[in-house]
Image 1: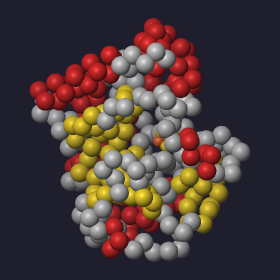
Image 2: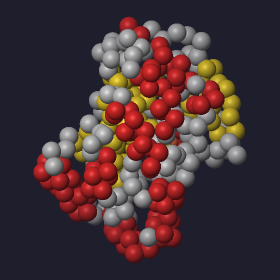
Image 3: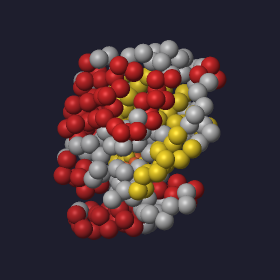
Length: 265
Ligand code: SF4
C-alpha cells in the first residue's frame, strides 16, 4: 500500500553533483519500485514521512513554466533519486508534462528507467533533438530481478522497450547497475542487448549505505554459496574482485567493439 500525496514545488529542476550531469529532474519524491539496494533511500530524511521508503510517493506539482533557454547545452538527467516512469506516472504524467516543455530545446536529456512505461512518450522523444533513453539491467534472469527489483518492469519488458526505442531511432543505452558480484553476468547482458543499445555503462554494487545489511541478508538467504565472497568484499574491503571484473569488462568490450564506460566506486 503506497501513500500518494501531491506537493507544490517552486522548481522541478535542481543542480546535480553527478559526473557529466548539470541538472537533475526528479518528478517524484519516493519510488515505488522498492529495489532491494535502493541508493536513493537517504532522501527520506528530507521528508516528513513516517512510512518506509518505497511506501510513499510525493507527486511534484509546479505551476511555473520551465525557462528552456536557461538549460541550453546543459546535460539534464531523469532521474537521480526516483524513477521518472514509475507506475504512478501513468496517472499523474508529471514526467510527460516536463518533457513536453523540452521539445525543440538544445538541452541534452538523458533518461534512465526500469520501466517500459517510457514507451508512452516516444512521440515526445522524437521532438527532442538530444535525448537518450537508458534501461538499468543488472541481470537477464527475471527470477533474480523479482527478488531485487520486485515492482519494476520485467527484464523481458525492458528489453522489448529497448528494441522499440532503438527501432524508432532513439539513442538507447544500458546501465548495468548495480553489478552484484557473481550474480550479474555482464557478458550475457551485452549479448542480449548489443544490437539495440548504442552504449553500455557499468557500475558496481556499493554497500556503504543503510541497505548493506538488507543485501547481505538477501545473499545469506538466496545465494549462500556467495556469502563469504560478499563478506570479503563488503566487510573486509577486499578490492580484488572488482579490479579483476573491471579488467574483464575492458577486455570483453574492446574485443567485441562495444562502446562502454566503467563507473566503479
Ligand atoms: S528504481 Fe532507483 S530510485 Fe527507484 S527504488 Fe529502484 S533504485 Fe531506488
